[in-house]
Length: 213
Picture 1 (cartoon, rainbow, N blue to C red):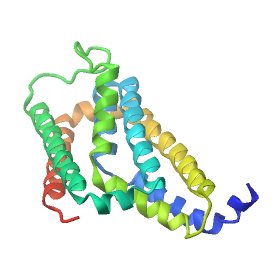
Picture 2 (picture 1 turned 180 degrees about the vertical axis):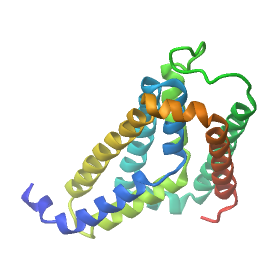
Picture 3 (picture 1 turned 90 degrees about the horizontal axis):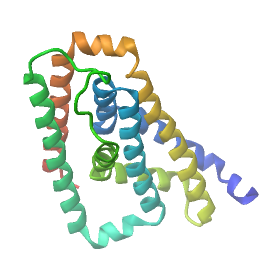
C-alpha cells in the first residue's frame, strides 16, 4: 500500500482530469437529465446505473492495456465509432419525436408506459460504451496517473477512486433533475429542452461519424 501511495503526485492530476470529464456535458449527462425530468428519479438513477457500467467497462479496459489492442485492430475502433454515431442519431430522432408530440407533459406518476428497468440499464450502458471518446478519456487518465514502471495497484486505485466519484456524480444528476422544481421547469420548457437534446444528439452523432480517430 505504501508503494502505491508514493504515486499520489501522479494520481492527483489524473483524478482532476476525470472530474473535469465527468461533469462536462455529454450524451450520458444529457440522457440522465432528460430521463430524470421525464420519468422521475428512479428511472434517472436506473439509467445512471447503466452509464456507470459503461464507464466501468472502459476503465477496466484502459487499465488492462486496451490501447495496444486498438492499435493492432484499428477496424474495431472504426466499427465502434460508426455504431456509436448511429445510436446517437437514433436518440436524436426519438427526442425530435418528443418535440412534435402534443399534449401535456407526463410525469413519473402519470406515465402509462414507463421504460423498464432492463431497458433503462441497457440504454445507459449503450450510450457510454459506444462512445469512443470515453475510452480515449480513460486511456489519458490511466496514462497520466500511471507512469512507466508503476505497479498494477496504482491503476486499480485510479479506477476505484474515479469510478466511485463517477457513480456519485451520475446519481447526483438523477436526483437533482428529478426534483419538483426541475419538473416545473421541464413542464414550462418541454419543447425547448427536448429540442436542445435532439440537436445535441444529432450534432454529437454527426461529429462522431465524421471525425478522424
